[in-house]
Amino acid sequence: VRVTLLSGGVGGARFATGIVDAVGAGALTVVGNVGDDLEVLGLHVSPDLDSLLYTLAGVGDSERGWGRGKETWNALETVEELGGEAWFRLGDRDIGLHLVRTEALRRGSPLSEVTARLAAAFGLETALLPATDDRLRTWLDTPAGALPFQDWFVRRGHRDPVNRVRYEGADSARPAPGVLEGLREADLLLIAPSNPFVSIGPILAVPEIRQALSERNVPCVAVSPLIGGQAVKGPAAEMLARLTGGTSAAQVTSCYLGLIDVLVFDEADADDADGVAALGVRPLVTRTLMSDRDTTRRLAEAALEAATVTQ
Amino acid sequence: VRVTLLSGGVGGARFATGIVDAVGAGALTVVGNVGDDLEVLGLHVSPDLDSLLYTLAGVGDSERGWGRGKETWNALETVEELGGEAWFRLGDRDIGLHLVRTEALRRGSPLSEVTARLAAAFGLETALLPATDDRLRTWLDTPAGALPFQDWFVRRGHRDPVNRVRYEGADSARPAPGVLEGLREADLLLIAPSNPFVSIGPILAVPEIRQALSERNVPCVAVSPLIGGQAVKGPAAEMLARLTGGTSAAQVTSCYLGLIDVLVFDEADADDADGVAALGVRPLVTRTLMSDRDTTRRLAEAALEAATVTQ
Image (cartoon, rainbow over all chains, first blue to last red; front, side, top):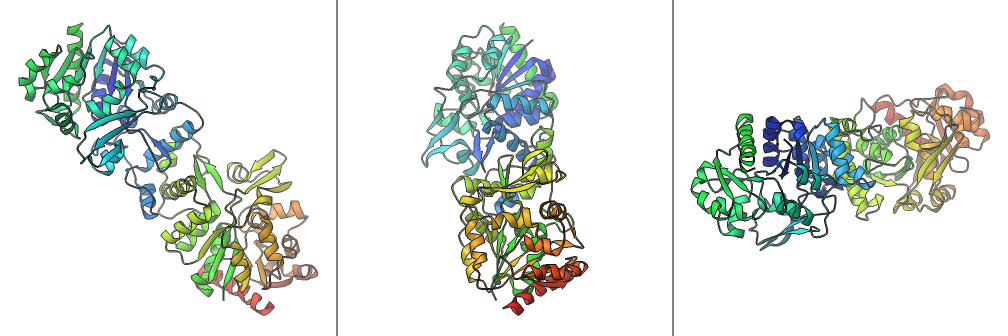
């Protein structure tokens, strides 16, 4: 079985490890969000691709939840001492990767090629693809003005309510090499329990990706990032409430209308099943908290099974 | 007494600390070599300016002799794991500085301005100036071809004999702000015990710097980097032998003809005194090995005294 997963960073990366446990690393293709990429200190940073890379390679920091394990922070400490931009937390090992990537991009390699090279160096068997090689950036319109994603998310701690999400460059962005093949040749498609607006939204904003998903011949299963109407981490619930009027599983479903066949969501939201079904999407209620390797694998298996049944 | 010192990296930086001990940090202006600057991993590295900065700020690594103390190497280790350029040894704290400098240069700040800002952040009272803000790069013509300085020095371990030294960009390079003032308003001028070809040569290759030195109204004292015809470290002796025919103090003097009034050199080379004098330069023989703070300060005082006597 060949699986293609659309994913954001931390939560999606964890879900991806469950899929790997269930179907094997070589059977999975991950299409990662690049809308939260940024240039900081002259480095091109791709936080979601890196979360996927580090997590799938087993070199991530499981306690902190992001970045690399056995990390040190001396470069950034120096940057701070010297009055440089230190608001975006970059560890020393992490910076090593950004230096290599930035240099390769500057020499003309597309992001997909650089990502493949980095993944190979980490021994990754899973295909890791950026949604696009083109410049695509998520912007948030807030009462404080329009903010680039990381300014809103990290620098201001996502405290500004979001009136609108925009994906700069998306209209003209082409899917990276392998993405359309991954979507068309997979036996099933998955959308990770990532933020629908700022993690999955930028991927779906690439016209040919959205089109490929809406024209799919295989089932597509999304996993809700909310449990009891709350996000395990991050601003998904606040955004959903403000942008769709609520935080039910039906509201999550509304973000993916026409693109998914099943929504997997938590037992805590079991009452929302009718609302999901009313939108023409099959509700699948299970436990969705990925607290350890077992629960993560079980969630992955539930999503895979839902797809198989649908097929 | 106001002192202006022309200096390369490690040895020159140590000598500079002796001058600081002797006359106070605020009385010294250092004009540093930029001919060995390089771009590596997208970072602008100024090894000599950094040696001066770290050493004068007291944050250098005294055992290794270069780079910062309490250094870690995780970024470069990662670069190496990922197949990036890892031949130029950059520590994590060091990289922090390069990130800040590179970003500032990219935004249009001249090197002198960035250097002043870094020096201020380290609490430096000594004025630290790059010889020029313009691009000036040292090239070595060798039997293996023309090599950029760091390729020759670090990557190939300065094993290739040098037929000729060239300073790319020097002809059109202007002295950085403050350099000419430093040379014209000082009470005495010093040339550090650095390599005449690849450390001091690039500074003197800037036409207006050479002119200011040759038109000086105050004494200029150079300290030979050789002891007993040998360099304490580095390729100075081999270069001098090949490019001037020998390694005597007279040969060192010949590198600075018309630009210095006194050459300070080691007791081991006392026999060379007549040869130096024959070139119209006053020989001053003393112990020149800077093995600790005391000997370094004594050498600095000998050079300062030589200038005063000459005056």
